[in-house]
Each structure stands twice: as C-alpha cells, then as structure tokens.
Image (cartoon, rainbow, N blue to C red; front, side, top):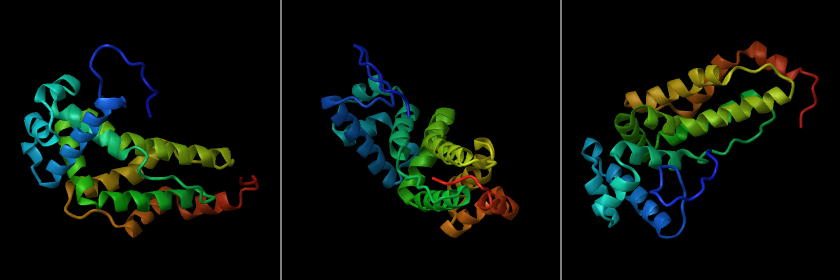
Length: 207
C-alpha cells in the first residue's frame, strides 16, 4: 500500500483516496466501471460511457485518470487491496493453502475476472501491477512471518511463480478457473513434504 499523499492544487492521481465530493465522484466512477464490465462491454468500455453511467462530465475523468487503462488500474487497485485476510495458521504451508484457496475462490467470481481481463488488456504493465501487487505483498508477509519463526522459506518470486502464476493463468487465459482444492495442491509443489516435516520439527517456539 502506498503512503498517504499530501493534497496539492493539481488533479488527483490514480490510487489516491481524497475525501468529500472527490471521493464520491471516485466511488461513482468505480461503480460505473464495474457495472459496465458486468454487462460485458469489454473492449467497448470508454471514458464517455463510464462518465455517462456515473453521472459526471467526461472531462472530469480525463483530467483525473487520463485514459481507460489508468482508470481500470485504479479500480483494480481498489478492488484487490485488502480483499483477502492473511490468517496465521501456525505454519507457512497452512497459511499458503488457506490463502491460495481464497484467491482461487475470488478469481472464480465473474465480476473479478471481467475486471482483471479488462485491466490487463487496457492497462499493460500498470494494469498487471494493479492486479497482482497486493497479493504479492500478502505472500511476502506470510513468508516473512515464517522466516521469523526460524524456518527456511522460499523467495517471494518463487512463491509467486508457483502459486500466483498458475492461478492467474487459469483465470485470465482459460475458460476454467482453478478450484480451491487444486489451488491448495499448488502449495505442495512449492513446499515438498520433506520441507514441511523440517518446519514442523523445528525447535524454534511458535508465537
């Protein structure tokens, strides 16, 4: 999550969370984007169409977001931030299994899929970062927590390759999103049984 920014006289940038009328406009625009994507407008999503649905002038959207790609990235950042709670099960294997199943369930939501596909398609790398950034931070938090327990842990990059990559590939590029049980099985590939036993027998006290 980015640090709060100091308000300036210029236009707001995507990702900021201003209050008052600006916050109401942002909420209305985000809602309009989600409604239009739910109607399967897909590639037909435009700034004027969003403005009309939100009940604001198109110039307001152009001034604040600049393009459909930037607008979608802002909506995705808001949607994917804090949606999944990372619980402490007592082991990295348990943490990751719970998390992977929750991500798989989220990705099976047609509205989530529509937003992801549109954001990645229109926003390029900015859109991809908006869709994966918070979940990579969640992975990092779980891995760091297990490192603090005294266990050997994979890198965040390795965990993302083993878990997020197949989850996102199934969701974005195929017609069949991964089921929770399948997602939990990905964790066994990342953390083989021998590593799980080593973690369980580690003498370091758990909090």
